[in-house]
Image (cartoon, rainbow, N blue to C red):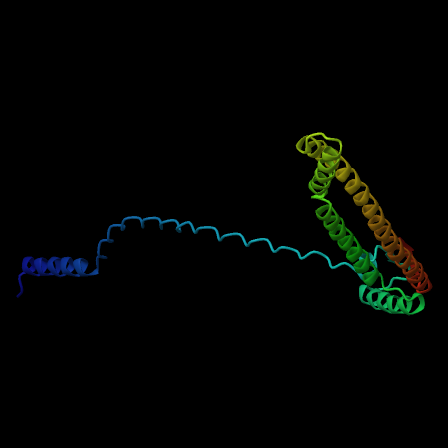
Length: 215
């Protein structure tokens, strides 16, 4: 016959072992909170692009000639350029005048006049000295003829010669400059008349193509 006390100890032991095996494992302690991520490094701003220089607008043929044409029928810039070229050629043929050549001729006349004036000034520069020499020679002869000292007469003659020589040279220079100025003025007027005739024809041609023209 089994001992009931011993059986009771066995049952208690078995129950304790079973409870120990079925008890859940203690939860692990919560881990430390994750550190916040470092903020992204500031990036340097990209350099601003350099502004692109806008090329100056190209002048039209009409504005180069001092004529301003406005397209009255909505013509494009390309069409206006073509029309102005056609009118330019037509005006040269009908007037016999090229405004660009006329302007060059007027400028050449001004340069030539300036060079001629300079030549005249250089040519008359020593007129006083020459007059003094002639006056001295004449004065010496007069002094001897009048039984005066030749040196004294030469000195008087030299003084008179300087004044006379300069006066004569100045008159020649003035006359030459006036003639040069008249020639320059005539060349400038001729060029101006040619350009005016061309502009009149050029404007009439553009107006026929429905442009509003001012010059």
